[in-house]
Amino acid sequence: MIKTYNNRTPVVPESAFVSQTALVMGDVQLGEYVGVWPGAVIRGDFAQIIINEGTIIEDNVVVHTGTQLTIGANVIVGHGAVIHCQSIGNNSLIANNATILDNAVIGNYCIIGAGCVVSPGMDVPDHSLVFGVPGKIAGPVKDHQIQRLKSGNASYRAMFEQYRIDGI
Image (cartoon, rainbow, N blue to C red; front, side, top):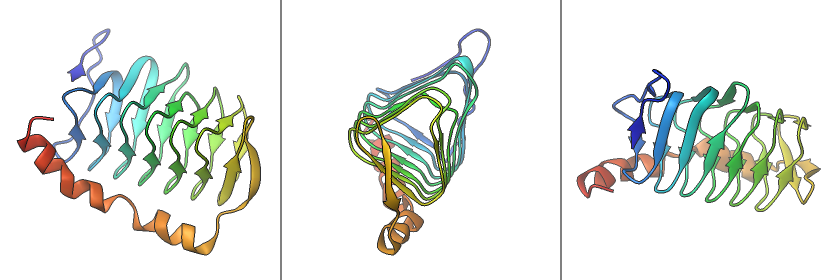
C-alpha cells in the first residue's frame, strides 16, 4: 500500500515492487528495483527516507526516522529488522531482527548480525562485522562474504513479477 501523508506521496518507480500488504507512506523515495516485502512498514512522516536501487526490505521490517535516513544500493534488510538510523551504506546486510538505532551510521559492505542492536550514534566503518547486544565490531567482513554482498539481490528481482501477477 502506498499512501500520501501530509501532502507527501512516496516516489516509487515502475521497476520497484511494493507488496500489497506493505505500507510505504509520506516522504519516501524508492530507487529502481527496490523490493518491499509483505508486512514491511516504511514511514516517512517525521523525515525523508531514501532507499537506493536494488535494495530489498524483507518481511515485517520497520523503517522510520526522526532525521533524514538514506539506505544505500543493493542492501538486504532481513526479516523483522528495525531501521531507525541515519544511514546504511551500499552492499550491506542487516540480518534478521537486527535493530539500528538513532543517528547510527553503517558503512559500505557491512554485516550486522541477526538480533544485533546497534547503539544510537554508533559509526560502523566500511567492511565491518557487527554482532551482539549492544553491537560490537567483531572484525572485518571476509572475502567470501564480500563476494556475496557484491552479488546483490538479483534473485529477488525475478520474483517481483510473479508477486505482482499473484497480487501479493
